[in-house]
Image (tube, rainbow, N blue to C red; front, side, top):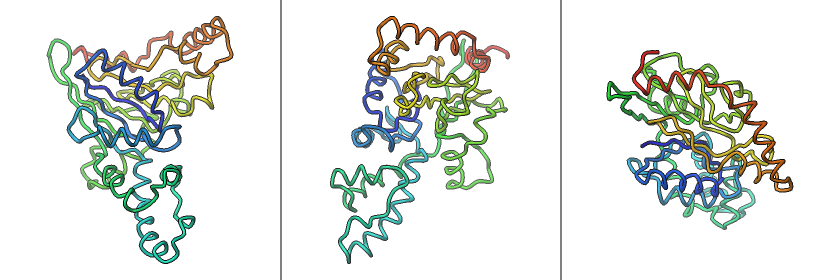
Length: 297
């Protein structure tokens, strides 16, 4: 089956725990990362190395381009100019153009902020597609359901060329707040953590959220220390079943985020979160489950 994993942002330990959980249950799982595996998190280097070793365009592990990967590709254009012109003369690494986030600092800390080390990284990032299409059978084999997967959103606008369409899928934020009004597909995206003002009754903070015909798998894992009142778990969703998969249970996650609390206090926090966020059936998810079952909505 197919599983889409939300924004990793260098949360390497959570990523490997989530992969283990999925693959122990489904050894033949096809994994699609939504993009934004770089920047912000504690183990960006380890995440980058894993991605370069495992991600292939048609393989078991695939990955979309996120806006953070997009920014690094754009930054590299300026880096090349600086390296070949200014650095060639001055040999002063401190004048290197900065990335918007911490990618350049990550490379510099390893002594690899140079053209030879960056070229294979940028070459890899350029292989990441702007969107992917996955089609799965509906219940009773009555038909097919199409998922369009993009880091931020998806568009099939025929008036957009490839670069413009990729830019839209990587960056658009306006449409995800509305959901997808068409009935030809379901859109799966990340980009905007469910911790943000995206949050509502349809998007519990720190877990997978839903709008009309759309699923947000960015649960804000990298922000967990800033918002310990929410689980902020790295998340995955199975496209064939809409099963949500997380690296651990709510109680285990809150125990990680509140190491000084007793087991009883952790159980109380988890129970309160569940009562406030997970007691009511999500109407958008319920409608998508009916589509998967091949039922009329």
